[in-house]
Image 1 (cartoon, helix red, strand yellow):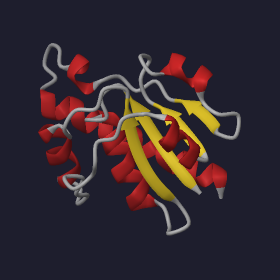
Image 2 (cartoon, rainbow, N blue to C red; image 1 turned 90 degrees about the vertical axis):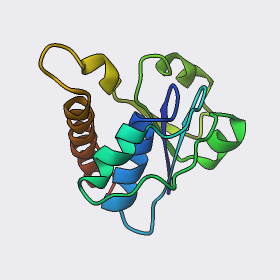
Image 3 (cartoon, rainbow, N blue to C red; image 1 turned 135 degrees about the vertical axis):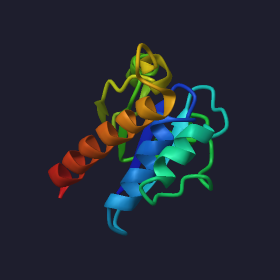
Image 4 (cartoon, one colour; image 1 turned 180 degrees about the vertical axis):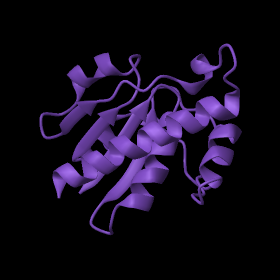
Length: 136
């Protein structure tokens, strides 16, 4: 099975989700991530995942395109920006949307950037564990 996570820039949420899914799944699942306008993997995302022993520094940035959508069996979008694009996904793809806020938008009041990224990381872990359990 091929699992694709998509967010706007493929630099934080989708990269963290890709790292978690690889870590939590078995060899029967291949995982990738993509974005509408990919940027480099955010250094705070790399640091946040490294804190729990998952290295995402080697993961590639990919642009969401027809080729990667043809590859995917499941597509999970993680941002409201990307959700409308699901109308263009192939009928062969199983699709779900998880509304996971960009952690940089959570940095308000007493929440620091590392805390916001850790909160996003932990929320993704729970969602991915539940997803993997549901497809087994």
